[in-house]
Image 1: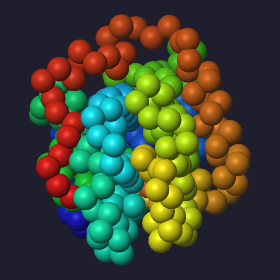
Image 2: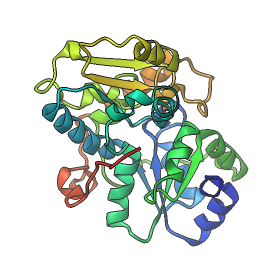
Image 3: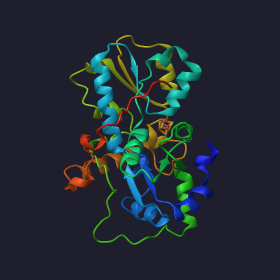
Image 4: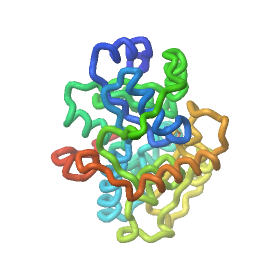
Length: 284
Ligand code: SF4
C-alpha cells in the first residue's frame, strides 16, 4: 500500500510519465472547481477525469442484480463498509455486492482508452488506499490532505482561470455527481422498477450502520451504506472547515449546474464507451 501512496515517487513520475487523475466525486466540497482542473494539470497530470461515468456503469450492475435476486444486497463502493463487514459482521459477507466500485470501473475504462497512462485516484479517505493496494487498475493514490500540500508546495494556490473554462477530460456524467452523499447510489440507479421504496435503506455513519446490522429490518432488500457521517464528504482526509450541510449543498449545486450543459459528444460517458468491459467481481 505504501508504494502506491508514495508522494515522492508519484511527483517524480508526474514529470516523466503520462498520468490520469481520477477525481473522487466529493472533490467539489473540498477544492474549487474549475480551479482544481488547472492545478492538477499544472502538477503534471495529462488528463483529469471524474468518477461519475464509473458510478453510472456500476449503477447498471446494481439494477441488474436487484432485478435478478430477492436476497439482501449490501452496496460495496465504500471500502470502509467492506472492511467493517469482513471483520465485524462476516455473516453478511455473502450479501456484499460483487460489483466494482466507481473508482475501479472508471479506472478500467481509462486503461482501455489510455493503456500507457498511469491512473492516480484522488481520495477523501484511507480506506480507499486499501482498495487501491488490491487492484491492478489504479496505480497510485493521493489523499485530499496530500493534494492540498502538493498545491501549496508547488505554489499553485492562485492560478489564472481562462475565460473558456476548462472541462474534465472525458467520460462526463451529470446526475451521478451526488454519489458521495448519503443515499447517492440508491437515488441515481433508477431502481424504481426493480425494488419498492420501503425495501431500500440508505445509511451514512458507521454507528448507524452497525445499529442496523445488529438489528436488521427484514423488509430491507437493498442497503446503500457509507462508513462516514454524511458520506464521502465527511471522509477522514477531508477538511473540517465546512459543515456536512454546507458540503452537501456544494455537491448538489455542482450537480444542478452541470445538468443540461452542452457537453461535446467525445466527452460524454455513454455505455458504448465501456463495451467489452465487465464491472462485476468474484469476491472480496
Ligand atoms: S464513506 Fe468514508 S470510508 Fe467510505 S469511501 Fe467515502 S470517505 Fe471513504
